[in-house]
Amino acid sequence: MRPRHSTLTPHELAIMKVIWRLKKATVRDVYETLREQRPIAYTTIMTMMNVLEEKGFLAKMRAERAYVYRPTRSQQQVVRQMVADFVDRVFDGAASSLFVHLAKDNRLSKDERRTIRRMIEEMDE
Image (cartoon, rainbow, N blue to C red; front, side, top):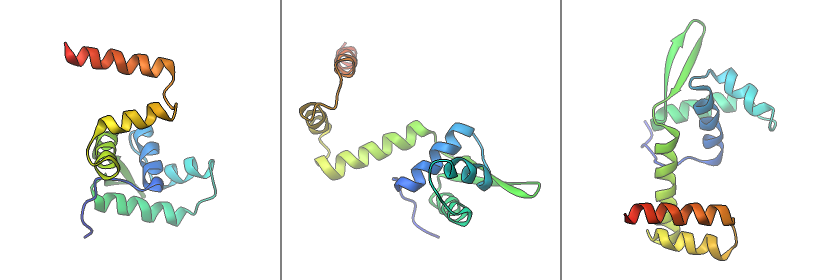
């Protein structure tokens, strides 16, 4: 069995987004959804969903002739961990450095900056 990883590859994340949106899904459900965006093989999706199960992100149950997969973690939990891992790896754990980087690259709109400012003020209260 593979060790459990806290982050997802881009393809794994795409699969998880489909399953989070649908709440539960078969390999066919995910395949049909992702196939609309780009060419991908059914067997690739099946393999990746098995890997996600091994990593602890999905649980499967037999339902008639197919397995149905459900997320074992919420999208919020996974994104929080991925962001924390990113901040640790890239910014040595300094979240403020991420905000400085985003602000300097003009990636935050006025509304986003206002929302962040309001959130910081609420945290200070």
